[in-house]
Amino acid sequence: SQQGEEDPQALSIQEGENATMNCSYKTSINNLQWYRQNSGRGLVHLILIRSNEREKHSGRLRVTLDTSKKSSSLLITASRAADTASYFCATTSGGSYIPTFGRGTSLIVHP
Amino acid sequence: KAGVTQTPRYLIKTRGQQVTLSCSPISGHRSVSWYQQTPGQGLQFLFEYFSETQRNKGNFPGRFSGRQFSNSRSEMNVSTLELGDSALYLCASSIQGERGYGYTFGSGTRLTVV
Image 1: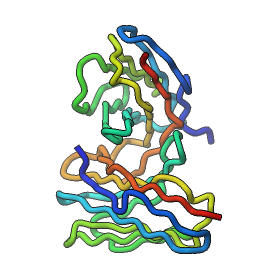
Image 2: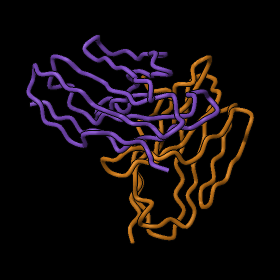
Image 3: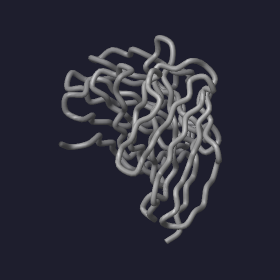
Image 4: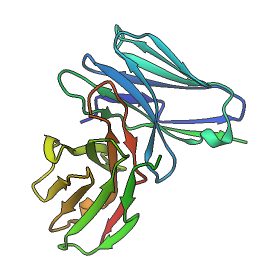
């Protein structure tokens, strides 16, 4: 079963625009991770944010975490065509360190 | 350093057959996890191995099994294949599998059952 659910399911933008994807989850978490998957390939780990953190940055990526709302957002600034991919959030909770994945947001960046 | 290597990349099998998939983790990573990805169910956790022992298991039937060798390489086996087993099978490694670390995924094995 999915713990995290991404929103929107699909997002289409122009190169240079910002892309925001959201993830909501149901139970308290230890950490939340974001991954990218290019079509038919493996997942690439982007950022891990712990439950006691509120914001993290990595290059053009900014992740926020609001544990009171049980939600996270991934912002990609100044998007590029190469950012076209599916983006997944994954959470670990309780005593488990096995990440549970959402169904992902499909991002298309038009050149 | 080399990433996570999965072989083969593509497989076509007939219903009823069995299949073995291989995963070589990043050097020094002792935890190997397997996931099944389908359009309908998304990414589903199969099992995790650490130091040659299955440490966690997802909700899959006993037809799905795995093992890990002393060099941390892992194999998963699916017996008596069903059409619904068609999926992308992803292997992920991490240093210890603990919650402070992210996973590094391989490119996956695309299994088609006909």
